[in-house]
Image (tube, rainbow, N blue to C red):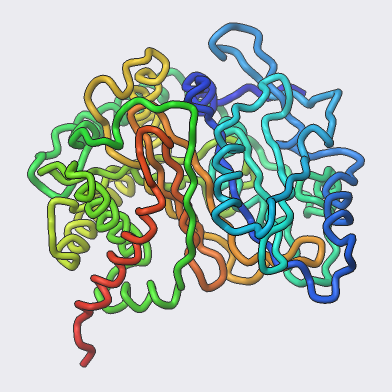
Length: 456
């Protein structure tokens, strides 16, 4: 049965070009189990392949009835080939993390075939320390980052002994509890749809009136930087983990949230990075921060259910604590705006606020004209307990996001057990030596630790 794409989902397809593939991914690092046989990884690969059928969204491919994705639907691929989607790879010795990230950079730059279900999975062996990795990518039109994280973690084992089918196996449709049939709400009347559109437009117009000199931020208030030029198809991926206990301690000391500290780390890192190229603007950088609007008990994890807010990164402020306070004030104003909207109004607001981005990509104007924001920074909550696959413990889960023309870097963070796993994806040509940002992230955290208020 065909399922029509939502407007926002179609937008991701509309924005895709050879230089800007619109898929998101994840790099999961695993430890080979103790006393595993020599053929363990061969067995693991066969485990990934051994499925009789696959579940949605992994089974879905595009069906286009009109050009420009104006009437596209998802349909089940009747000629699905699991060996096309699941592929083996290996690193040359000594198999350092540096080589792993370089491989993921190349794989993430490759556009996927729109005539097949748009996802791929690579089993990567040969990593030092008796480790291996799984890199998976999936098109953003199929699923957003929050939904992808939920889906992955819900289908992984909680102990090495637990035997579960592969994440994409259709067996999950039998294992998962049957959902109670619900009476679907009637589509909005033209009058209700117009009212929601009007309310969303009014919110967007009010947002655009935000004074430029305050910490509350709006679209089109960002200065142009070296991060905001057109991109090539080459990518560079950098990743590192930080202790959650360490970041929580800093957050507690400043009466801040973990997300506040993440944004402050990113603000400090980007300030130092741009200063190193003598390219720090006088005005503060503005981050586009995705916010999930998917209900916690939502029974449909496919498609996209995200909005976004604009937050200052305080890069014009030299003092780390003052920068954090500016970020907190900015985020509070943004959250207050979203919480004041009804769901239908918020959906309209989200579509309208994304239209300039989509049109800029589709028309080729992005990266040539004004800048809506400087960088996307996303913080996705993950599992608080260790996860396993085919007996192997997952050590880290690094997000690999996407970039566009005019927005050449993205920082995404996943929490996992007692760590925060940072993934930075950037255009290799537009944003040089992106791995330096990892060192600057550490420097920004240390600066906050060094000025922690004394506890009474």
